[in-house]
Image 1 (cartoon, helix red, strand yellow):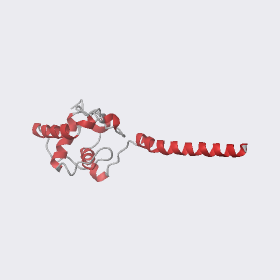
Image 2 (cartoon, one colour; image 1 turned 180 degrees about the vertical axis):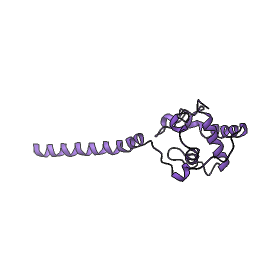
Image 3 (cartoon, helix red, strand yellow; image 1 turned 45 degrees about the horizontal axis):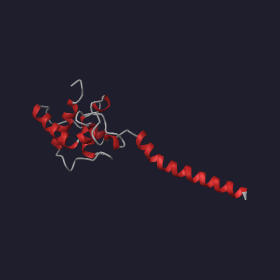
Image 4 (tube, one colour; image 1 turned 60 degrees about the horizontal axis):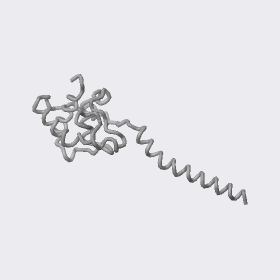
Length: 142
């Protein structure tokens, strides 16, 4: 009888380990895989809009309306919903973001990836490029 108890206990432990690893694996995969691959042709896109106060203001208005809830008012990734998101919203003022090409940032705005929505159905190309200019203006050195 003790052999049956040991077998039952082993099966229970095995099932418990499996259940816990099944729950943890997706969570840790999201936390560890923070890379966001952008197609090479998208990285090569250049912003066709000339930077001006009018374009920066338009980009800021769009950013304030669509982006601050996650990225925060200053773009640091500290919006009101940020703590509930996985992966966390990017700090748009960081060297990691600012070091990306305009085309990469534009593509990410348009395409999105969970939990960030893509905005290509909401924004015109010009509006998305205006947001790229505005994101560039968030860098402390700009």
